Length: 288
Image (cartoon, rainbow, N blue to C red):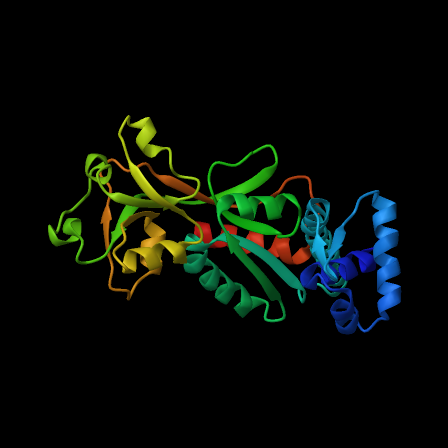
């Protein structure tokens, strides 16, 4: 598969319309049509079906679109990193981070690193730990800030912190009005709960019932629900700190499990000069 053809396919998939895609790509419509047919023949699948003079992407087309996005992103990143290797510390550092801790630490880290290496640029991407780890595994980011655990056979890491889990609520919520110093799991089991998509097993472990009305990602979805007093959200402490200035109440959970956070990068992978220098910079910060 040719990278240029994949980029053209992505444009067709974006619009599900060959004339519109051809106009944006500045190529002739018949040529783009031939490219699409050749790609389908090469792969042995139908990527689009035509219904009422409009294209509709097939399941195979959707899968190829997903893979093509990763392939083209990796091609762009590889080209950038090759230039970085040639030019030293004047390239781009690709960072992936969970949004809660990322909002707190990345700006501070970049500020300090930028003071030493002003020519370095940054590409930042955020999501939950699974999403960030997927991008790291596919080499779409150089360094990842994630919640533990992780596979130590595949990744080197710097442990950053352990944090407790909190309950975020509207200030008029009964638990907030009671001005409690902590909330018990038994009390939470009676509430309308919003939890991160990967953290719904706490109550089963404690053999407690629960009413999880919303599993959320990203953080903004939970905050909007809490602001409308539609329930309480279970969040890590760093997320609550990141919401400083909002009229919301955060209370610790009694006997809360801790959540470890670490900075990761792949083992047995050729790191760019920028990545190696940034890791060294982080190690120095942790020791100071």
